[in-house]
Length: 155
Image (cartoon, rainbow, N blue to C red; front, side, top):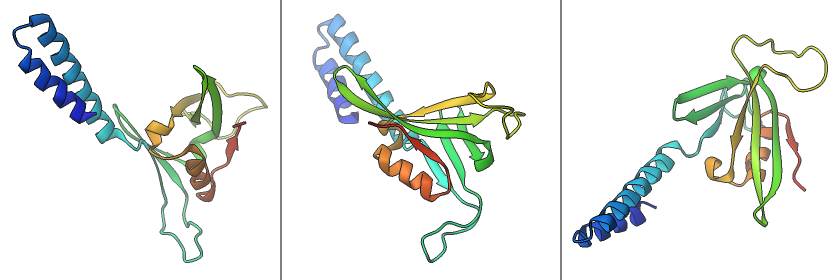
């Protein structure tokens, strides 16, 4: 992406005699460079960490936490603040795409719900394969190994 942005900026300079072309190609080049910088800094947006280190048998020690990177900063949620994690599969524009959805409890929300059904005191976080930098199935399996319950609703 960054290479494409640089090529567009070079093309804009070479077509400086055409002011509209200069503006459009320069703007497109700057946007592409900005997006590639965002992708470089933000990805992957989800990480699992633990209080202790991994034991010799491949199991994890300590309480797992999820760390999520956003433009607003880094947010860390311990396991008791995670309400639900699920992997979904959608059909869009003729192809299947997947999403990892994580419901986290908002500040001040009780960790246990009163009754069945969806909670109103959660915040939905949605991650695509692009956001995670890995296959959704692999991420779901890593979350399971870390001790989280993951619903897999892919077909």
